[in-house]
Image 1 (cartoon, one colour):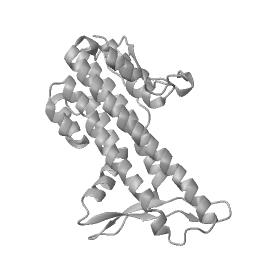
Image 2 (cartoon, helix red, strand yellow):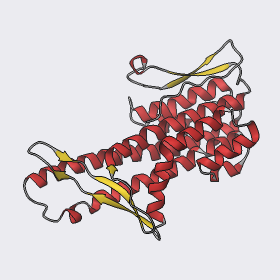
Image 3 (cartoon, helix red, strand yellow):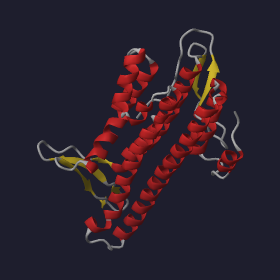
Image 4 (spheres, one colour):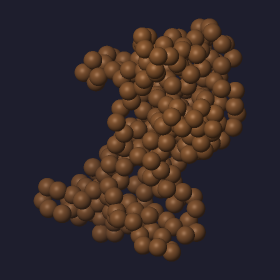
Length: 279
């Protein structure tokens, strides 16, 4: 099965030398080729449609974070000029942008879970959060399976925090996100904006840096897509004992198409995946 003319045109319209394009579109096409997913026209077309949606949402998140950084740069200049006496007013737009990234990130995770739904003929995966998906795979394959370990690890290290913040936006009965706005602390230094969850029935959290959190969510979410996609395709192919997943060192990646992972045939009977350390 090959890409249709429409699909090829869509890909050709995407920005060149773009990390998200390389790692969501081009890399996924390579993986589907070597694992034989391209031979199943129904699954192949469903996955192509899904990764286009994931690409669009991840790109929107990336652009939103860039705009937040630019907005903070402008705010810092205006603080220098004494324009903002009421910081609460000037940061309303920033707060809205940050919460939009959280909402979009949760949507991306949901879309990523459509991949195993398509490959393994189980529509319920699409509606699972990460803990439920890991539990389902554990029931099917055992707790030592790479998918179980990988999803559980990602959830504990970064996604659990994303879910907590997103839930504080949607379910405000007992908790809410509060912000500490950027402040100038010296002639050349600013305290970057922070956020925390405030609870009605227990002590508030310690504030954490917003930009650092968004960077962690974005980068790990992209890696999560890549790893889930690769492992599910290998599992689907039946080549679990023949294919290994290798992370390409950054210095060896093609600058024009910087793919992060590749599949390699291995001689030993144990699948390996060397995914990047989560932060």
